[in-house]
Amino acid sequence: MGDAFCSDCKKHTEVVFDHSAGDTVCSECGLVLESHSIDETSEWRTFANESGDNDPVRVGGPTNPLLADGGLSTVIAKPNGTSGEFLSSSLGRWQNRGSNSDRGLILAFKTIATMSDRLGLVATIKDRANEIFKKVEDQKSSRGRNQDALLAACLYIACRQEDKPRTVKEICSVANGATKKEIGRAKEYIVKTLGLETGQSVEMGTIHAGDFMRRFCSNLGMNNQAVKAAQESVQKSEEFDIRRSPISIAAAVIYIITQLSDDKKPLRDISLATGVAEGTIRNSYKDLYPHLTKIIPNWYAKEEDLKNLCSP
Image (cartoon, rainbow, N blue to C red; front, side, top):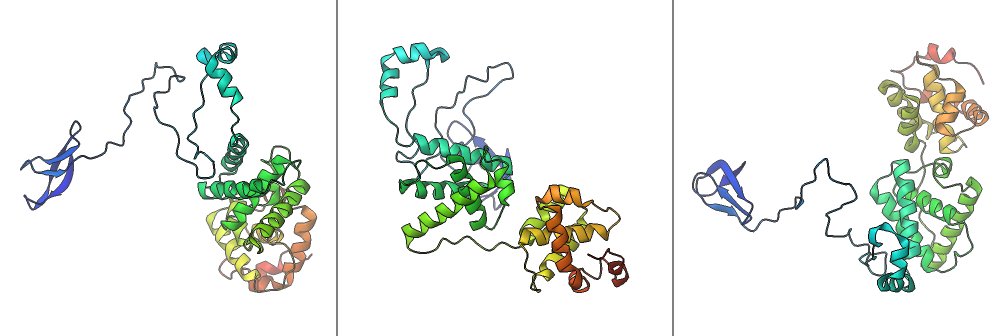
């Protein structure tokens, strides 16, 4: 039962859905309001005592335009889960003989999906990373390079292009052992390769300190008022010529905001949450210190409070 407007009754009435015919019928006058509706619910029921290995789904996943066959190829399953019977069967031998040109891409896309899930990235970033890797792979010049570093670099570029940047250290934490230097080299290689392909430089997007602020504050468990003050301070800091990386400025602003609050955070905790070295945070704090009266919001801290901060 549901509620819908009936054109005959000229009012909202209760409607009944006829599952066998796919019709939506007015319960008062019997008028068919909608016919041949598609039932998008599952065609089976799963009970608690049923085995999880028995998947009743009779359709595959969505098509993938990045794969040659659209991701609609068929893989012959192993009978009873034993590899011996599978290899001895004629179908199994033909399956192994056939070369799937997209096998490498499928594995790469799975790796990117795993890294994206571990970082909590949205699907648009994952899809963009897949597109970047496909373009690089089509150039046939990536053989011999560190595959994990390439995939991590694709994800890093995708985050930048979607205006949801992640630090190299964050990407490195899910890169299956690839180092920051390897990811950096892979990024330069991808930018150069795609630039030669398109004939123009690859747009990476501009990084701002505010892009990292909410995530860093969340990692430190800061309250809403402190987060708001930190975001306003970062925006005002862009008006000054502070020649530090956006990540370093974000870490220094968080350090200042926490020192002005009752819940002070030690420098070591801020370093761990932001991935910025303690010495770098101190140097960034030194550069920000002369502008504190113009950077820190008046509603958060008075000028007397700013004077109580330790001088760099």
